[in-house]
Image 1 (cartoon, helix red, strand yellow):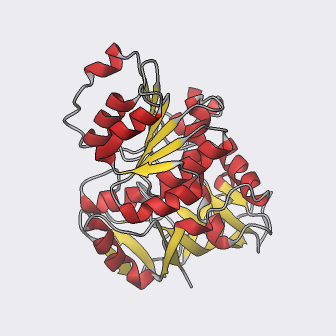
Image 2 (image 1 turned 120 degrees about the vertical axis):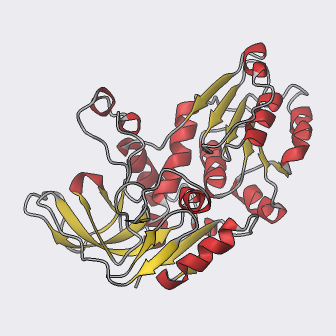
Length: 339
């Protein structure tokens, strides 16, 4: 079997001698069709992250069920599916409260600490599988996982209809967050992004205006000269968090979606207290979010196809990682088609 293995910092390898996955009684075997390259994949490639060396990467997937275990009840061979890649314990306080993304073992997920799905075949517990309706394409199916991140973040933020918002970063998650904010009835959405070629798609997704991050004061002026009530940081580096603290209005809310484990220099952290700002982190989503996303796609409430800017083959993955890791680039979501 062919698949993509993470071998440590700077090492992504395509292997063609991987063992075929076994199928436990409660699992299904998936013939993978599409798998997205996630920002967390690239961050672990660039520097030490949460990924374990030697694992098959990939957690944004769609595929077809080709075998089911003896205890599988709700699936059948031929079903087209996607998966929730988080691996809960099912037995802690948070899991029992339908908050599996806060499981005592989080972050633990398929494609990070255990083998993922950027391979020809992949086996997974039935409970992690979501069937795709006929109206959702396989390409869209592989976008459900990142779409769930943005939808969940906006749901948890408590945003009120008509409130002005700023979004730092218009990569996949930033653009999805803009989509989710439009659905939630946000007022003017201002996107801050260093790659100016991405400004156009931010406007297409629902942003009112776009700026480079160093021009955040222009957003402040547009929001009654006191700043937006809500800010979503989809980058999570020192510079963006500091700018968010400076930009948000007093009594406002900052939601941190992007994550950089190496943040060391936050300026104006004191401003969180002085401005009475609420700063909260968001990690992943729960099963209900996946169901919500599938319903939104089925009802054609969101269009995420423009976010898929390149489709490559398995053999092209290492060079794609090299290109992305070099820095600023025009692509949004690179999807791997597995044939």
